[in-house]
Image 1 (cartoon, chains in turn cyan, blue):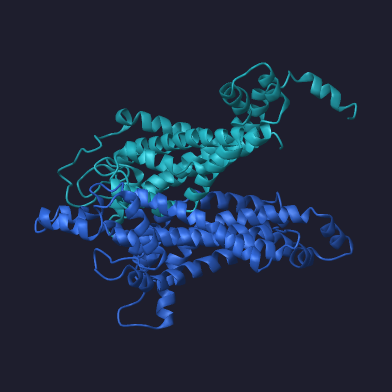
Image 2 (image 1 turned 135 degrees about the vertical axis):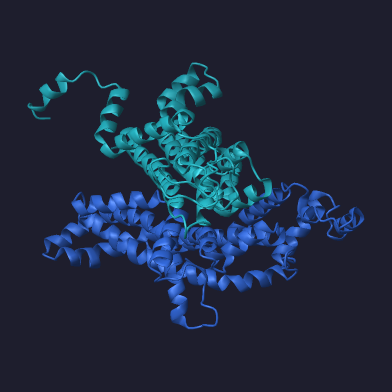
Length: 293
Length: 317
């Protein structure tokens, strides 16, 4: 409004959405820290076979029988079977991160599909899908996941399916809301006037405009997926040993709490750091992608 | 709000309950081998006996028939018998509900007592050091794996310092209230922890919104202290949206008890659930799932009604 403001806006190159997003995101220091942490964690997980000092099921027969506290040879100590705890935490990252990521993608996919259909077609489709959403939301999530895992004794893939299939409701409601308002906009009318098919309008025109909140929801879902998997594995109902995940490492460690507390310390710390990073990242993305702020 | 409205809402929950029961019935049939799977591994149960049980329990009937008889039995209070203990499921649940309500209730009150002041302070001192600190702590709170925190606190308070018992609800042979409280401290704190972070965030944003209102400015303008403005003028309105969140979360606290009760060997509903899971005790599991869903639906309803009751601007036709 004032004259002084004009030069500064002129100096800037044109604001593409991407530039705007990047500037807002980089301002959010915790989110950037979270992103960096997650990249490091992902690298550690991917490179685990090269970084780990021992094989993930390798046993040191000399010290077998009693867990050993952290030492130079074993940074996080060893368990009763003489396995290196650091190696197992590193390998645990692979499964925990993969389950979190895959289940978040699955629930986003389902939720986006349900929400798009409901919000776009409205009327009967909307009622049926949203009543279904209401019903699933009425069942307490954690007990249901525990029940299904207990019944099916899942491998990692099935576990991802269980967590993903039970997590789509929030995204569905979110996407439906976006579709309900976006479908009334002029660009949708324009596309329809040009003869665009329903699918084209839904997924080519409306969906990209609803992407911001979906990305944020997906990010946060990664955190809750990791948390749910660890809780299940902690209860002994998730991923089964010898495949290490942070959750089942904690399950094992809980039996040794008195004599080998270091076994419980590190896997939990890893869960905390990972989920914290995800949540910071999600918060930063929300600030950067929300057009209202 | 009146009786007809209440009745209408109650009737409105019926389709939800029906949907939930259909879904859970479907889940039950996902179990490999069906409900008689427990007996299938048992060498002393012959195939003929198994077939007989199948007929006796009506498991040879077509699925829709099975569903209808299951649902009518559930709604008439016949929840069947536990496979593990052979006692009525209702009896099993009634015995365990007391400890869970004690634990859940304590955790609920505790979270309110911690979360609301934190949220208020955060909102009143917005963008100050203490606001950032509380915000950071709440991020830490929602990201905390509670089962790990429980292990760590057990390690510190029960193993290292030996000031609190690590598990159970009572010392054997003692039935004093003090002993119960002693056992309650750790699990209640852990269970409360999960909701404190979320609730303080809600409280903060709700309070920030109210503090921006004109009438708050008026209150300030007539010379009231910040404390008086916040407590007497802003707080009541800021609490309205919190009611919904808190009512909904009570059911979440109860389902969170599954993990907490397992870690602390608390003899409540949550532990019963895990025990039944390990024993493949499907009648108990199904009853608990149905009861849990019913609790969730009712707390939803309660949240709506309470919301309308405290805020006269909200009218349901």
